Image 1: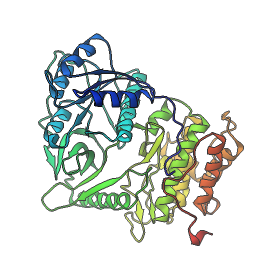
Image 2 (image 1 turned 180 degrees about the vertical axis):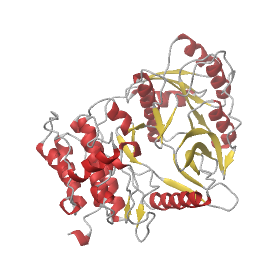
Image 3 (image 1 turned 90 degrees about the vertical axis):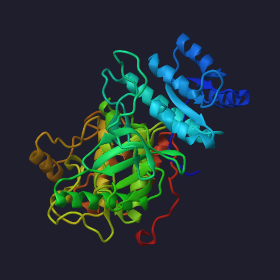
Image 4 (image 1 turned 135 degrees about the vertical axis):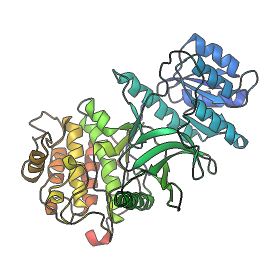
Length: 458
């Protein structure tokens, strides 16, 4: 079986299924109850609204066309009455425009009927995880993330009830994609949640930032193209999938990627130390993805908790290949460094040419941080932080009281070797070590993409 290593437990959450076809209601109810969800059903929007007013639900899974009260009218009523459930929309093929309108009104996503049950289950788990994350927060901060950019909870209290309104400052379309909302912004551009009417799926579209300085814009465009090329050539379940890239003249330069709802690894770490078993599960997936990238001549160069998104089921996704190094390419000037300093390998600061083993050092810092609950190297002062990476060893995990198998301590220490020649020459050996730890933890240890050690490393 190909896929990430996970331990599946029972799902939780209260779901209301709204559909005027009884067979659909019964099929979905039985399927979801089998995974541990609590499920109620309603035959149309009016019946659903009665139930929603009577008791709380986590999520409403609703059809679009129904008698008495349609799916669109139900969503509008939920918003106007400030009820709390999230909403997923089900729609037949011929109703794409209305499904998009439902998402503009507040539905989180739209699935074609009859839905792919595995896709539906993944969507429900993502919604439930996001709700749990929001509930765990003690403030109204950002608790879910899409492609590493945080987004506010979908509903905020309003002084008076009013229908959802689309932000008129947003573009209506980007290329062929219909804009549903803004997800976030970063140094390279802005990310929008969009709908692809051709393939009928929700996507995240990153649009390159407007840079007044022509030289600065040229650099952004180079990095943007690099991200498109690097991520686009890597088809791996633990690497964000790129669907489309456009750099047409007189049009926005954009990158369309899979839409992901999850929690940044950094947010999880901030809540406290992670059990060694969970840390190994995530580290195995990251090492698997990085080895796959490296054998395809791509070095990420910015591996850090902020560039890892954890989806329901502890599925890890590596994001942001904007500063990746491709074979026979160079985006940096010799003697300079790129990436997040706290996670860089020593050779990055020495101005030396780096190879795939620099990503190993960064992975070691991420794994250390998961286990210790704090970064491996103190960067309160930049120059002192650089000195720590170049010359010092982080406090040992044993000294911090991390109770884990000796092999795990050895793996972290090897990844953190100052001399890249003392790290893993053959990264399949790293996967073997992490796989042995995964077996001790009772986790699956299969590769996302089956492969053998390259001949040149045998």
